[in-house]
Amino acid sequence: MMFGFDYMQQSASEVGYYGSAPDLNVFHPNSQMAIPTPSPWVNYNTDSHQAGIYGQDEIHWRHLILTGSIRNDWYRSHQTDNMYNTTTNQSPSQITWRASGLYHFDFGLAPYISYSTSFQPQSGSVSMDGGKTVRQANPSLGKQLEGGLKYQLPGTSLLLTAAGFHIEQTNVLVAVGNTGYSAESGLVHSDGFEFEAHAEPFHNLVLTAAVSIQKVHDDSTGKPLIQSGKGNASLFAFYTMPSGPAKGLGFGGGMRYSNKSYGGEASYGSVWVPQYAVFDASVRYDLSNLSRSLHGWNVGASVRNLFDKNFIANCLSYASYGQEFCYYGERRNAQANIGFSW
Image (cartoon, rainbow, N blue to C red; front, side):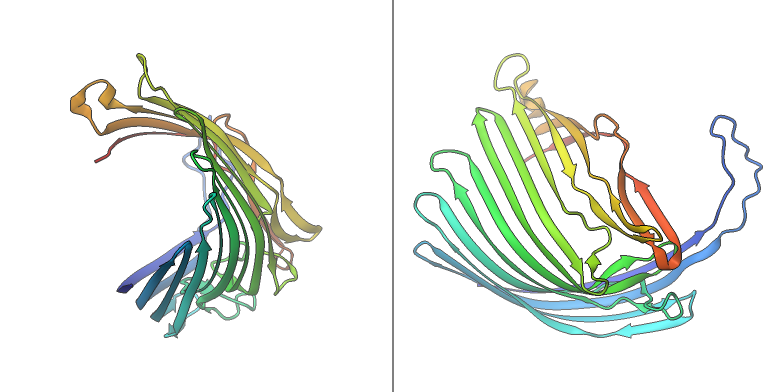
């Protein structure tokens, strides 16, 4: 059995301004351009305290594993919105729990089922009447039912997992256009399926693949939850040289795919962000192959969006406010690193 206690104190503030500016010629910039003073956008301070106690037990009986846990949270917060001159105090408490079961068959199959509840305090400003009144966001409560299968092919590294899930969550925050506050969705349902595969078909070659399909429905609007996608997929391979002059050199790459996602309602109808796919690559080298004194050291580099694809990552459209915003995804991003492992 396991028991524990945790405590967290947070202080946060956010100040933002928004305004228009004249076009800038990046080849012949004019540093003397007159820029209008931006208008206040968001300005609030939050101080919160959260304490929790929890316990967990796991029972093994032959091929069956049963797990149960319970937690009690106490939350207290004080938030002042300096733009709307409002103060919000909260002091909710909540008991959450989790129960799961898994059964191991001798031939490598392991079906499982899990049910859990959740409690998540939230900071930030919320308005449900177009900004006339503003308050602190309420905590989000949720529950999740998940069931699936895991399969390890005996004598191999092949691992397959498949799972289906149903999630219900209250008070999900949705950004509201060009404002400093969010709106709370009454109840959001998420139903989906996930599949993952991990294999080493050849020595030192690792393949991973994943596919997910989901449907996220906002009961308060009768439409998909804004910024929720229909699913994604990925496929990556990584190979490490086992011998020769390049021994210890690893390299690989793969693809990330995102299905279309919902961007809200504009004056002309529903907005959907198009699907897109980008490619990544990475390289890593174990420096111990150069010298024993460098044992544990490694260097590496990675590039996201290898071919620098231009794509729209998400949109926010609000017909009632006459606002539409779309944002480009991450351009090519290269990083290098050095690390040490004990």
